[in-house]
Image 1: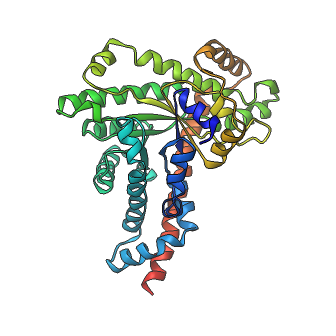
Image 2: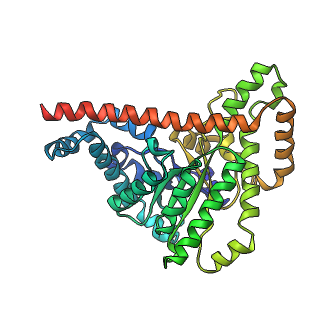
Image 3: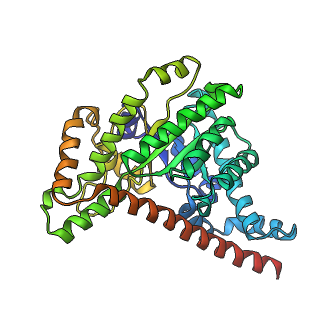
Length: 367
């Protein structure tokens, strides 16, 4: 097992893989990563599935089976993706059992086209939960204004949730409120709170990409580049600590409720001038998840240096960084609004590509 990844895990960071394909499952690659690389969870999204199905002949047999039943494109995509996620849940079931449900989790996302439709999101979340039929599933719901009530309703039904596409601190506050409201309703509905889990996926690298571009356009101080993503995430953790120490939460925790852990997402470094492990190593702190593309996982295993808690001692520095960015003319609220909109749009585009790929495969299977 990689010593560097083991150290990261021992520092309180749950290492999840931000990727899934039938090839990983059938070759035993995912199981090997669990054994050798401290991987204790998996996240997926429309882009990941689009890539997997575009390059995967391993899906052909199931496509032919679904075509024979008369399944349309969306039904076929649903069948293919829930099969992969169900099988990944089975690979990670031992981790799930060993950690009392904290880890061993696999996430699947509701259709991104539903990001602004609360009722349809709730309905699809329930459909996915029933279809996968594994207790270690997480349903990914975007933290949009329409997504937050869907998060509450889904949790209230006893379904575990991964809240995705979180970029801003005000947005994150609304997500935590939606989570606690859902747990309160779940308690009122008679659910065992200890079985309901959630993570809040806070995107990191995209914040730097957007703000760096604005700093360049403004001719601002170059020393501010590459600092916003980590600072923003550190302030999110400060908000997490504050929110989950209130009397309201303590009461629920006493009834078996689990904290909604922050998950650092979009941790692949996009600027080659930056340290390729920065969104992992600089965000080490307990009670967090870091979901990484395999390239980042390998970089951390090779040369990542775990230096203990890199979040809580840096709250003041993070505030100073955000103040300096504001002074340089960066409109934080506008940055976040753009990132949320673009995030939804990118997943909608990937979903459309997925539907096109599967549609072509269905046509071929019916010939």
